[in-house]
Image (cartoon, rainbow, N blue to C red; front, side, top):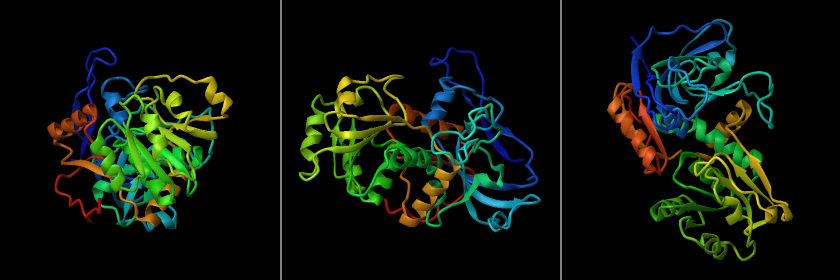
Length: 367
């Protein structure tokens, strides 16, 4: 019978508990009207999944499958699917990583209806840590042909989050100077790749000089160590002489990012915040008000933005960065090792599981 991975509930306080992984066997699902049956080849971790295991994320389900990133091949279609969806049979697809947000650029279309990320969520049974998944036909998007299985699983959640923060919120344009904080994480790396492909001048921060050097090899113009007290002054020296300011900051850390970047931002510049890993709040300074700086919160994105992001990846031939791969959904010790790498911040790119353990990663990445 097909395998499925969930988190197992044990006693403990939020932030102190660490839910173990639980492997289950389930019947092979059958697609209903307007649905596709996808055999998943790979799935990937996000910080959200670590927060779930620590009970630091709301609405956790202990019966629905874990993880939000998935790449697989459509095996069959239920009745009444469109001809376009029927043509996906036998082809690789990406699973949209959320439910309930279709196209509005402002946020989930209907605020009275639930929106949720998939994976161990109470509001949807969908999750990608399983061998088979049935999804509504609109929730499977044809995967870019140049991606292998590991790269495909690495893209959905971080790609959507990064795309919305950079494109919808920061409204990045060619020639602009963009600062991406915390390079090495999945979202930050996708923002870097997207912005470079758009023709932006990208600068990065990290606590690790080696990660900055890797980012430069990927097209970043420069970078600074955020642990150094004068990193903002160091960054100013790296900016182009004909454009000695930042147009936007794409940030997932929070903390003192406003205080450090406000002096570098142009009047009316944007800080697009997609997370606060340093802490749950940040200071908003009067200096930012006087410079007309815009602070924009950004969370995941719509299905429309997801489709636009995937098409951009296809058009530009972008390959998501994969830090480490383990094989087998039943390889619980190996998957736990991936979580340990995430805890320690060792990764540069995404942490991926090849589900059946025998699948070929496929086409070689150039990175």
